[in-house]
Image (cartoon, rainbow, N blue to C red; front, side, top):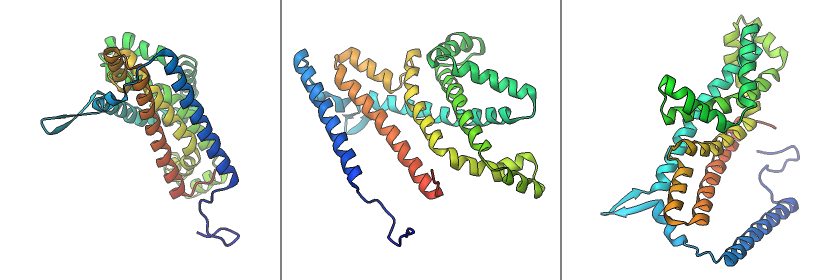
Length: 270
């Protein structure tokens, strides 16, 4: 694809890019040096060679998933379900906030103020220890509900901002075609709004991945909980936490890459 100057568009390394890369490598080098220096002073015995068996174990010619892989699958399940529910809750709340109904706006506002002004950990404990015994929710459902409600509150404001940013002429054009409000949203407004809010929604999804680590506090054996269990058995504190952090980093980077690809395909300009 050619740009306005007639040259072919694409990635071109610049002096700024090179400078940023050198700074990043310098920061990594300093961190590695600090860790090595600290471990020497502590007399810590690194046991990296034991880490692979917590990912996969070879038994009778078959590759068996280790505790870290099992925990990672639970984390991905919780994240995926919570992501879908959070989007639905966020969209419904955004509609309520933009509604002409006073009651709908009051309900949405109350929900937002309660969720955004209380810690996620408190909400998780409240749902699991107070609400779950009353309505019969399990650990997994309680965790998903807490994460969905928490992230949905922030997603709703992002979606509302995207809807409000659509020009009034788009509404008028949709109305002139005889579309009702629901079809105006579905066919005209939301497709444009979602393109505009895709980057902040991605940030919220990444926050959801990281916040999912809190479900270990209610004894769900996700990636974090499995890491804690391994540490309690082996005392490999640094190795396990570094590996767990690296796995979370890989997930969030992969999520960002997918969204960047979607932005490029949809030709979103930010």
